[in-house]
Length: 111
Image 1 (tube, rainbow, N blue to C red):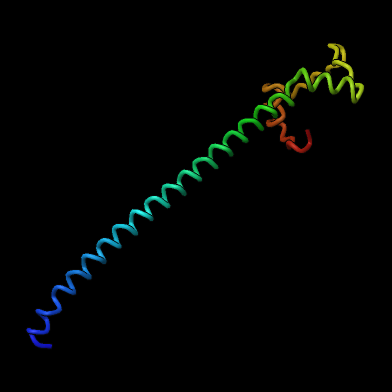
Image 2: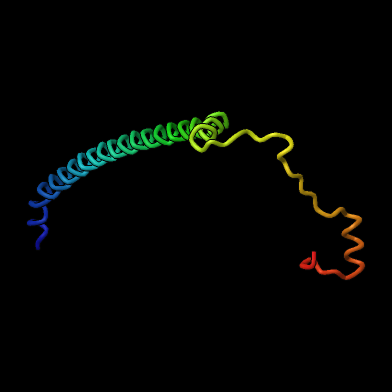
């Protein structure tokens, strides 16, 4: 290729570079817009899932209210409220008794 041929092709190459640059700019703007829509869609989906989680937490809190559980236990399962004389208090060995047990060599499994 001679320098004369190259000089004739210079305007063609410069126009190709300008066209390629413009197409690149348009492509990048379209990608930016597409990514913006993707982010918007994900944001809406996140908000929807968060609201659904919040409503489920509220409904769980309503269902597990002590008063509701108590009324369901009394109505469906015919359970009665606990009275003071029905409670059994279990106490473990005192610390002083544990020391004597350790001194005598009694294993924990024997307790």
